[in-house]
Image 1: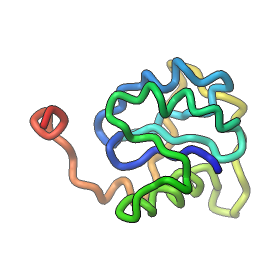
Image 2 (image 1 turned 30 degrees about the horizontal axis):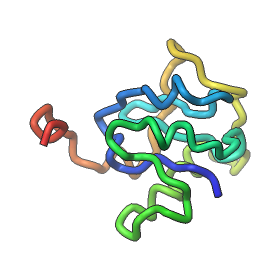
Image 3 (image 1 turned 180 degrees about the vertical axis):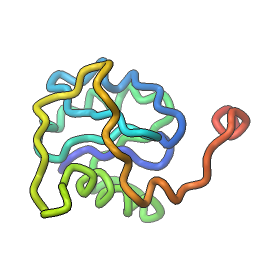
Image 4 (image 1 turned 90 degrees about the horizontal axis):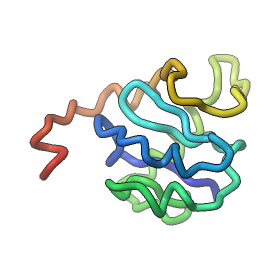
Length: 115
């Protein structure tokens, strides 16, 4: 089962998960990070280090967060349905466009992030 990043990452984007990924399959989006569904080797390193507990194996995602299984997958497909395989993310790379569903989430404020 691939790992996915859930809504807890939106507007937080701590990024520590990217430092533990041995294959650089975690990509920065505009408001959150995403795990590439094919590049991920399912080692779980990112899950163990995430400070906001946003990362789960797809089969362990709560019912309320199930749409993020699809979101993490879909964000890597182009309009023609072709999987984009960038070959690894590096700090400083331009963020990938967020999934359209992420754009609909209300913005988090500093108070929301610390609560």
